[in-house]
Length: 270
Image 1 (cartoon, rainbow, N blue to C red):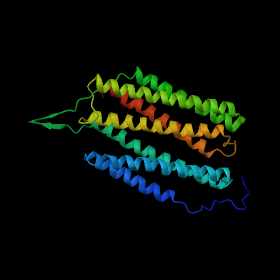
Image 2 (image 1 turned 90 degrees about the vertical axis):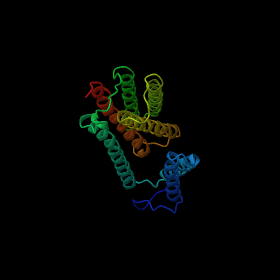
Image 3 (image 1 turned 30 degrees about the vertical axis):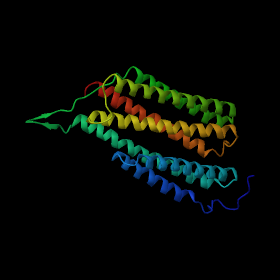
Image 4 (image 1 turned 45 degrees about the horizontal axis):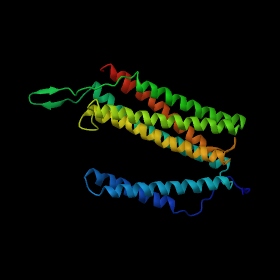
């Protein structure tokens, strides 16, 4: 049951989840380094599962705080600022990969072979087949999430909220399946590799990390769908859904830049 508050702030009780999340993340990253050295790959998976469990439990407590009425308007502003800063950090993460792509393509550091410099080979993907289809799918998914947000905030229409989220999630899942199929075709039939080449490294890191963000965003929207069915969101209090929508639109925008830069501009041969 929600209870009235006599102040605008939320005084958090002691929680073990920040500490456990930090330890789990450290184990996961340390395990990833050891895995790259072909040693103790199981350590990464232990840290990965522990990170998921800690994060899920922490977010579950946050949801309980919201239901209890602890998320006042001032607290919700702080949560929004947190989401904005998080997305800004994600933007800078992708800036690094775009920088690597443009730097290598326009000012390549050629590899030395004998007495001559040999320019790295450029490989291209037809932008107007599967990549274009995936672009349309992701944009339609973003439109569905916007529809769901409008239905909640302006109409308090829970039927359209649930339908919009469902469509957005399904299209996000289709995008992931199509990208997996694209990777399969490039590696199995086109002879591409995940490493050993500057172009391959940049292409798979940029598009692969975006694909991972799509997967995370899909899970984010799925949690919002479950909460929407339970009646958690109101037109005045829906920071969790708002954060998911912002994240999903960020994923859309990053893909548009990837599509134009890596697929269309890359197809021109620089």
